[in-house]
Length: 358
Image 1 (cartoon, rainbow, N blue to C red):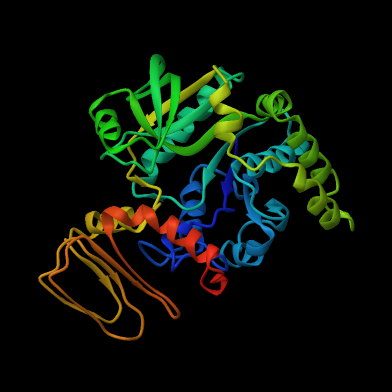
Image 2 (image 1 turned 30 degrees about the horizontal axis):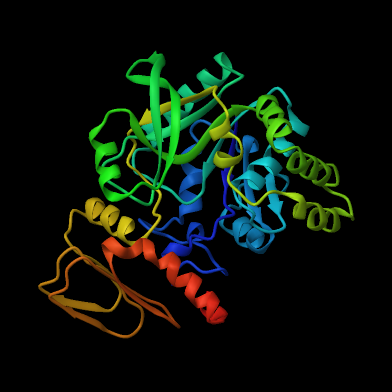
């Protein structure tokens, strides 16, 4: 089985740390390793290095190579620019199909925190078993929700199909995108809803056939790009043909249209670190502390706060559920429960032409 680490995202909701020049997957969150380094290293007990591939946009290729020196040069799959997971997955599928059209693969985001890697790998092994037994299905790894989260997509499970030890696999009834607060609370209380973590396992030949069925223009473009790989014309062909790729997610374009989908519920200490509020909660649990502070900070009577200071002293008094992020050229101050709105702030920076801060 192959593993594909998807590292083309920009993580805009972790602005101002995550920037266009260096997105969140290239930053450290819990320890010394960056998120992409953690993603790579947790795969090593199960996957040979030669079977691990990394998708990354051209702008971040050098940074990815620097952070992952063990990955062979030819295992980096370089996108001209980001278009969404439909294009990212398509390019990787075309590459893997040229290597082994009968193989299986698991596709994983590069910017997630997983605190129980052994349990995660046990689920990945189960996913491979399912793909071998049900090669005409897409297999997803879902996460049992721990709180109502309006920023997450959800997967509704249906009938149980398989079980192994304590692991189970269910058919998928439907996908739900970013519900309101009351609906999210109902989903957490019900057994059949999982967070959609964007983790896929599939037979390479089958998923290619689904691209041919639903996204033939995208498949044709990436096939021509991979055929030009290694030639002097690669950059020219890639830049030209990538314009033909639909700018959307593989969920919208393929998964939500398919009936043959399985999902494995998982509990492995997962977080997508999608916002400062989420990261704050993860860090508080990890360090068993009400407040998280890093750098030059002093506080009195604060509660549930995240402060990442830089060179100047940041002093706080009586704050609750507040995030303060200080970088060289920008400071973010927001409520933890409003941190999903940072994406709207990015849109406003773009609208006002303040591109130096993106």
